[in-house]
Length: 162
Image 1 (cartoon, one colour):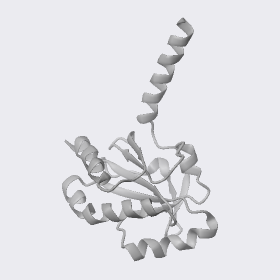
Image 2 (cartoon, helix red, strand yellow):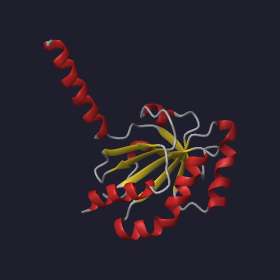
Image 3 (cartoon, one colour):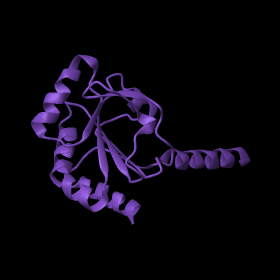
Image 4 (cartoon, helix red, strand yellow):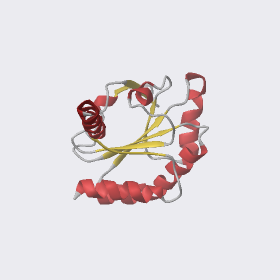
C-alpha cells in the first residue's frame, strides 16, 4: 500500500513538473531558412504562445484564423507573441509559406518537419497550444479547437501579465 501511495505521489509531482517544464532544445527552421533553437524562444520577459498546426488540419487553420482576427488587440493589451509551428512533413513543407501568406497570419512560423519538438513535448494530436510564461516555463497546454477557444487562451495570458 505504501508503494502504491508513494508511486501515486511521484506521478502527481511529475505531472505538475511537466506543466512548469522548460522548452526542450530542438532546432527548427524559420520560413526564411534560418535555424531556431526552441529553448531560446522568448518574448522579452512576456508570455508567448506556441501553436502547433499542419496545412492539412482544418481545425488548426480555423484556430490560427480566429487568433489572427484578434491578435493585434492581444499584442496591444498583453504584448503576447505567437509562434506557429508547422508539423508538415518534408515533402509538404513547400505548402506552408503559401498557406501562411494566403491567410495573412502575422505569426513567426517555424517548421518541425521531423516532428522533433512535437515528439519532445509528447504531443499526440493537433491543434495543440502551449503558453510559456516570461521565465520560459510551460504553464498551459491545450489540444483541439472549438470556436471561441481563443478566449480561454487570452484569459490565461492576461493572468500571467497582471
